[in-house]
Image (cartoon, rainbow, N blue to C red; front, side, top):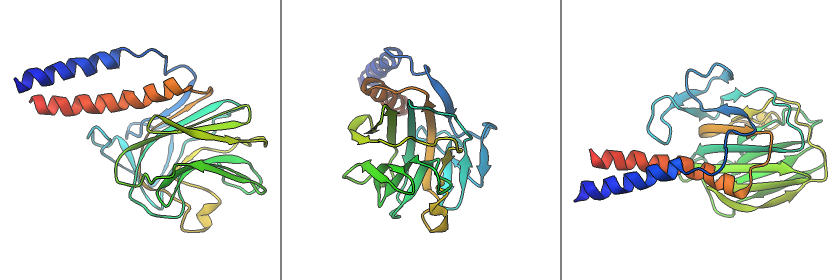
Length: 233
């Protein structure tokens, strides 16, 4: 009876994976799955470890002194960053994604501030942040998305919309996107990420709320299927 019930659940989740209503490949200009066969990035000392599915060498293991240069993406007004992360670090600033590597640019940084996930618009004259009130450094995998269009950043965590940042300044996104590194913060102990990163996606368009939720559930449902398969064995 147990196996029959689990198989019914398996079929239900399998159907949910097949029932995607949006094209999550549309506008996808970069996808970094963090596997050892990915030669399109410049690895600066990052090792590889298990991802959220338990697959070996499928997630980046950042030790607080390493990063990966993901290259220049030439993004304009509309874009979306999406990333999975896992950490227990309590650092004041733990950078996940950033293009801010010199003082004279205005750019977006995704980071954790004492465990609270944040998106910040930074330059010499501005520093606007928006993020969670609760911490996300619990050693579990979490999903973060930030979009930009027409002067607004909108942020999401684990598929849920959190709010927006008003941006009246043009973004200078002509520098390389770094995973696990912030060029300005490098002068302090906060320059590098401590934790795991996986499945970074960059779009040249804005994902809407339904697409963000679907992208989150795509991984969540796959993870549930993996657990059900183990129980059925």
